[in-house]
View 1 (tube, one colour):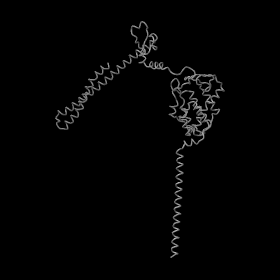
View 2 (cartoon, rainbow, N blue to C red; view 1 turned 120 degrees about the horizontal axis):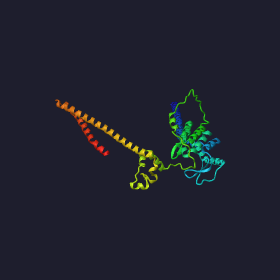
View 3 (cartoon, rainbow, N blue to C red; view 1 turned 90 degrees about the vertical axis):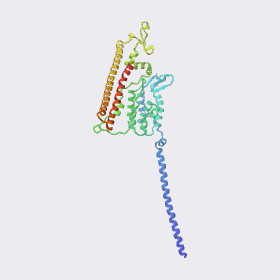
View 4 (cartoon, rainbow, N blue to C red; view 1 turned 60 degrees about the vertical axis):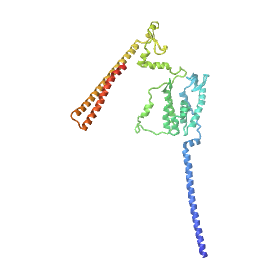
Length: 394
């Protein structure tokens, strides 16, 4: 009896040990799975933060403009030894250095170069902080030149910076061409100096990039229509002279030029409205505008006086002819509508009077008479309305 009990206890102990071992294996497997899931979640969270987190972790660049980049900026900024006044009242001297308030003393070339170095420092910091990808020295110089030309806010919002941070350097170089306009005489125009500067910056930006050969016999270039339309402006403007007269357009003078360009308003401006009792005393031509734009009759070329009157008469004759043509077409249409209505009424009446006493014949006759009657009434109303409109226009 005892040996049997002992064997049963050993069997139970072995079974329990097996259960414990299996549970341990399950627990270990679950632990490994949970650890993998946690690691994946941490990795997903770090990748979701993405570029912003990598940008924070990336040490800021510490480039400065090289001698080549400085020479490019000096070439396109231009050197001015004597201060010249800007339209806003400030003064420019050296290589585009702005003095607030007074003009100050003249500046030598060496002083201007040192001052330009100091003026470029904020833009060097701007490019170092804004760019999130690695650059070559030539690329950095080109971007500083562009930022100095267009300003900090425009550079931060530009497509050039976005393309650079995306690693699309060729697209960034192409985007530089968008910054070639300036305010010239109150209008945004393409300036030849800015076109040349953007071309030099593009060449410098792409200078150290690797490039593939493109044999012309194998890869013949084709026309890019979008670039052809956007890249070929109708006209160019030269850079205005600093220190010259204000480039702002006089609003009154410009308005007078616009009004005189149209024949109808020119005739109005040249119309004499002086009362007869003042003609002998002043012999002056007055207009609907203020007296400073008035001129004597003798000062107006005879060809322009005759031309203005002839144009007014021609316009009046054309309007009369146009009105008569419109009325003729309208009368013809009304006459055709009247005839059509009477024909429908006649057909319907003939069906009724020719013995069509069944229901189908009567319905068909009414279907013809109703639109015919409506067309006749509409035509009669049109004939009645035309003389009234003519009298009102007269």
